[in-house]
Length: 276
Image 1 (cartoon, one colour):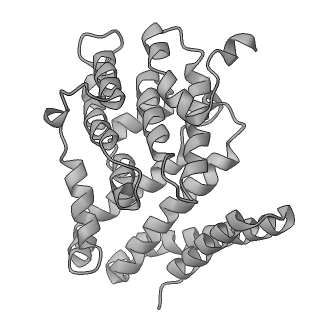
Image 2: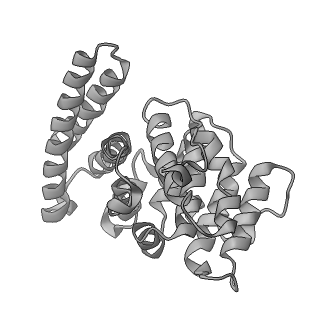
Image 3: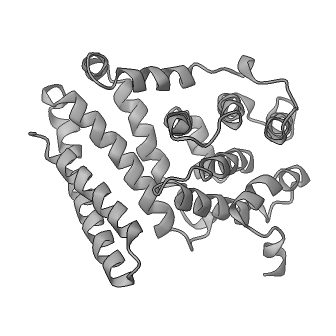
C-alpha cells in the first residue's frame, strides 16, 4: 500500500485503542504517546498528499485516512482540553476534522473515484443526512427527546430574541432524527454526518460560543455519548460537560430550562457555576 498517511493513521488508531485498554498508567501513557506521534506524522503526509497531487492519490486510501483522522481528533482533543473553559478556546477543533469528511465527498474528481469503490454506501448515507430538511421535523411529542427538539425549535425559530434560525434549522432537523435512533453501531454514521454536514455559519456560531448553537451541540454530545464505543463515549461526555458548564452561567431562562437533558446525561450538576 503506497499511502504512508493511511499506514500511520492505522497505527495511531490501533495505539489509541491499546491505550484505552491498559490498566497501568505507564503503559497507557506509552501507547498514547505512540498514537499521538503516528497521528501527527499521518497528518503531515496527508496534508502534502491532498494539497499537492490529490488527483494522483489512491482515493480509497485518502478517504480512509480522513475517517481515521476524524476519529482520532474526537478521541484526543476533548481529553486534551478537558479542563479548559469553553470560552478560553476557539471552539471544538475536532469538528473541523469531521467536517473534512464532507469536504472530501464534495471534491468532484475524488468523489467520482470514491463512488466507484468501497465507500459508495457511506457516501450515500452522508448525502441522505445532508438532504434532511426542516420539513422532516417530527410533530410528535411522544418522547422526551422529540419534545426537547420542539423546545429547541421554539428557542431558535424566527422572531425569538437573538434568533439566527436559518443557520440552525438544518441541525435541528438532523437532531430530531438522531433522537429517534438507538445507540447501535450501524447508527454511528448519522451522528458523524451531523457534524460533517455542519454549515460554516453554524461552525462560526460554535466558535463564537453562541448559546443556541452550543445547546444543540450539547444535545448531540449527550446522544452520541450513549454509544458504547471506546472512541466515542468518554470524549462525548467530556464535551457535553464543558458545554453544560458554560451554559450553566447563561442568564437566558430558556437556555437554562433545556439544560437538564444533556447535564443529566453527562453527569454535570447544574448550578455549580453559581457556587464558584
